[in-house]
Image (cartoon, rainbow, N blue to C red; front, side, top):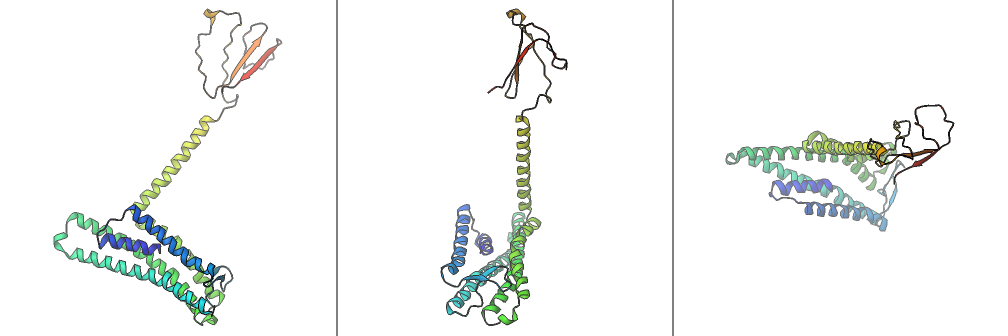
Length: 280
């Protein structure tokens, strides 16, 4: 349904020249999810049921059930969730390619701007056609095997035959980002910007942590300012000291004033009291 909505968006943009805004995109996303929840929630309410598949490695609908209620759900489910989206995509892109071809044939519109627009639209259409082709290649075998189980050909479907289309169908979601990377320059540019911004924020966060990390005494040299308790205002130290949030202040007092050498490993015989003061 997402691919069908994208096809319809390109259709109204190219064929009918209507601009798609963000409210339209949000409404489309809401409708896609509600439509999908309705069909995937119906088996939980009694219209068919979920059970193990033939290969016993995953759950799916009960394709082999002969109950008329279950068989009717399978018919409507295949029609609404496979054939209808494929029909919308084929109709939309068929009209897009026809419109682009008609515009190219008009000589009066062959301006530089029109040629650039047509070239861009053709490239976008080719990208979405490739996405639809991958979708069909991935899901068509699974749909064929499921219909064989539902309509009386279960003996032809062995676990080995059933597991390959199942895993191949589940892998379809991994192909679209690869297609975007190789075919959309705008996607590549924004993707690189996203990666660079995340990397920049990570580096900034690491630098901030390194700045805020409090160093140990061994990492920072200690420069003592020794002042006698008997000194007056004229004998204050001339060196101006500024404390910041990572400063550690030691107040050292002793009975007899002496020069205190913090780099010396010799022990002083006088009694020294050390008070460690950490700022708020």
